[in-house]
Image (cartoon, rainbow, N blue to C red):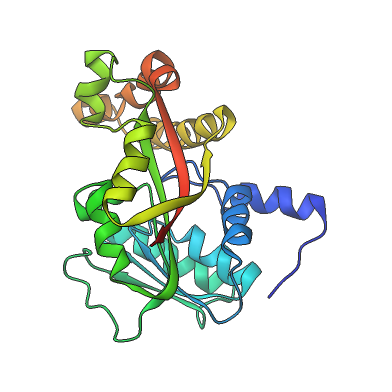
Length: 246
């Protein structure tokens, strides 16, 4: 396990682990790890792991062991490459599969995480119910989930985002699934904007590198940025929480 005390190193780490699947920064992931009291040798499954940043950071700084599952082949390739670059291939592995198809090991996990990907299970409450079954006694769930700040949001946002719960509904659904929320934090405006504009930058890189033609114009779709500036920053938030079976 590595202890980082140099502020510059932490800042650089935060930029190297650039989140593209959600707005969790390296700072936030490490904060969650501290709250969970992660220890060397504890096991973590990351459901919808994306590019593997969470598992790699927790393995690097807390000594955890983990498996990440995602249905997107390029993300699994990126996650595997990240683990190799960081010298963590003996601590984390990544599997290309849907959560429905993934064959769970006999030994349960200490932590089950799903950061911005509860659609893997069909929504927030179904995710909690499924992830409870992955846990060893005393295990914990970590979820990142979007929410609407009110039911009265513009129709354009509803059409873009689909059905989205409010914060109070998240707590109600956790309780209905036989759990209680422990640690809870909202993404800051800075985290939201870092996520949106990191992703927008990558889309623009692809667009600018393409030859002229219909495909290039389709890639120029700017709704990702525009929806944030016009709607999401006012009517939507992102919550990160630990959830404990009771």
